[in-house]
Length: 291
Image 1 (cartoon, one colour):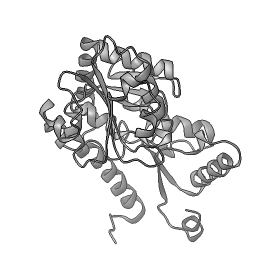
Image 2 (cartoon, one colour):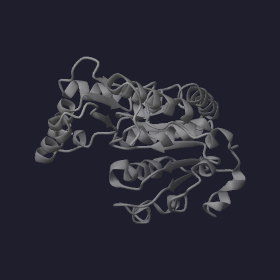
Image 3 (tube, helix red, strand yellow):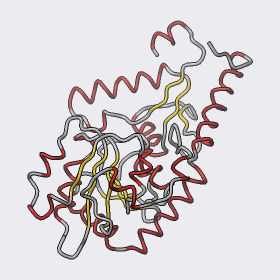
């Protein structure tokens, strides 16, 4: 971006998609934050993927009026059509794990398995709820990076170990979500979590940490529940509410689906970016130039 500015490139567009520096300390935070500050100065057009991210950037950097924008309601890609077409059906469950029980209520985590996603918090919170009066299960779906689900399960009480399951990466997340009662994303950092929107497209509500991005994907007490990040007690309470209150959970699911249909279909989101880039090219060059 610095070189482009020096050479006089007319269109210098940067899209922010989740900042690392808010969760760092010391010199690494200073360096990473300085890089973002430099980008805000050298780019002449800035986009970000959520309203809460926009506020974070504006609160931390001096950004010229109207230079930073969110297109539509946020996200960078929207939800693909297959999530709206796939019916929720428990018969899919055997494809992903033989340990899933048809009559259990299932909470699913869908995404990368790593520390910054709050996986340890979710396992601990799930283990701390009262299992004597609940037939519930927790399923992790995604590739392990710097975290081992099985190692963490081994540290939990004996009566909960067989209720926490893990499978690897899937190319068919819609079929995993087909048997979810709700999805949980306890991350410490996010851009705009598409997994929550994909679940919502299928009428699956969400529990998520109250951070940038997730607080846009979930409308609190309308399409799901938010809890304070790293707060095990708060997360555990949210899990209990979602497991226990069938009416509330289904109401959240209906409202979540309506919201995604209205604002987050892939075609609508992509068209916003297409029009934005076409307008930039027209304003600077008179037409769209593809090289």
